[in-house]
Amino acid sequence: MVEVIEYLLVFGITVSLSAFSILIVGGSLPILDQSQAKAQMDQIAGAADLAALKGNATVILPLSDASIACSRGVMTFSSSGQSLSSPVGSPCGFRLTSVSCLCKLVFTQDRGELELMVES
Image 1 (cartoon, helix red, strand yellow):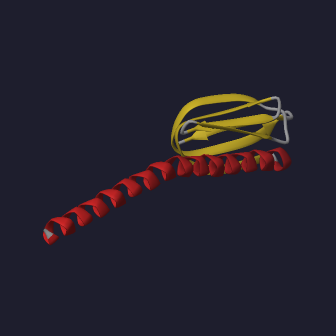
Image 2: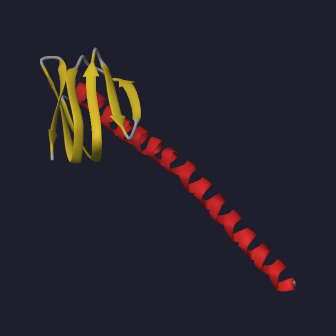
């Protein structure tokens, strides 16, 4: 009888810990995706701001099915189901969709307007 109780306790603890681990990992993955998208947006917006001030800037990022658009001085970045936007210091008008690569994003300012070229 004692062995059965020990077995049930060990089995119950193992199942509880497994379920708890799945909840933690399942809840953490979306948070990690959000953090990565936010960090990438910060780097892209920083490069765009620098290009608006200096004339050009480059940033290298791993992107997976990302979209980058800019209109009326507001840049939008979408990746992993997240969509973030940030104002940039220059007029702009470009749109890139489904970008997947270790990308070299080259921002230039030509005739007062910010432009983006992607090199993989």
